[in-house]
Image (cartoon, rainbow, N blue to C red; front, side, top):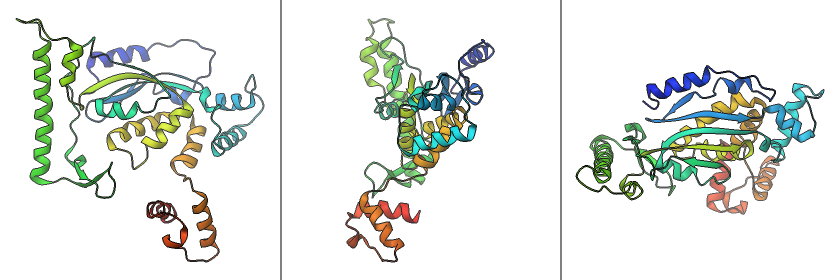
Amino acid sequence: MPVTPEQQAEIDELRGQTKPTLRAVSEGMEKHLYKAHDVLDHGFVRVIDYMGDDQAICQAARVSYGKGTKSVQNDEGLIRYLMRHWHSTPFEMCEIKLHVKLPVFVARQWIRHRTANVNEYSARYSILDREFYIPRAEDLAAQSVINNQGRGETLTGEEAERVLRYLKDDAGRAYDHYEEMISDEGQQGLARELARMNLPANIYTQWYWKVDLHNLFHFLRLRADSHAQYEIRVYADAICEMVKDWVPAAYGAFEDYRLGGATLSGKAVECIRRMVAGEKVTQETSGMSKGEWREFMGVVEG
């Protein structure tokens, strides 16, 4: 269970407290505030705090001091214009702070997005819990033969059973040794900062992660993509659902222009013009490499 009864009681207490405020409030985000949304077998994402809404984006773009006389349709049109033309600073006026519980190997991918403020649970100071990410059988896959950083066909039969057994047994054995090393019963006990090196990359850690909306969209564009690793993509998917309720107009534009859109090179645009004109274009006549052409045709053919 990702959240213990004690933690759930603390969340319920926080959600039971209300305070008057003059700042912008997103009704959609209020329903997510403090709630833990389960991810993977022991992970979660929950909103700790947020700032701004769709109107804050428009207000910053117009540099106005109030709601103004613009209609909702005008605001949505402005947001779509800003997204379409890659404006960034108006979206930076919104921020979100998340509490995330995730496997260490996912955290190492996540931390590559260096445009956020992060504070992680300290294994130098505290003892990590005996919680490990163990994939579902259907998520075990062989190495892709066309993508060096992707998955291929699903493992089956005895091989899948053996892999799951290794993952569970190795993680449990490593944690047993970790507990044994840090114990001070009948021995000095190894320092926690040293003992943690023996723990596997599928053990869970936690952090607070604060980021502005512009950089969050960049994170989601990469990590909510169908080509992203499953274990980080499910976190991105959970965050997408929160952002959709927080800033619906901005998320709608993001979904249209970034998640559902495509960036084309000059050669690709020229190929499309030639195709529209009725010319038969091939990889050999396109001026693109085989990899570029494969990706281009993936966009054209869907």
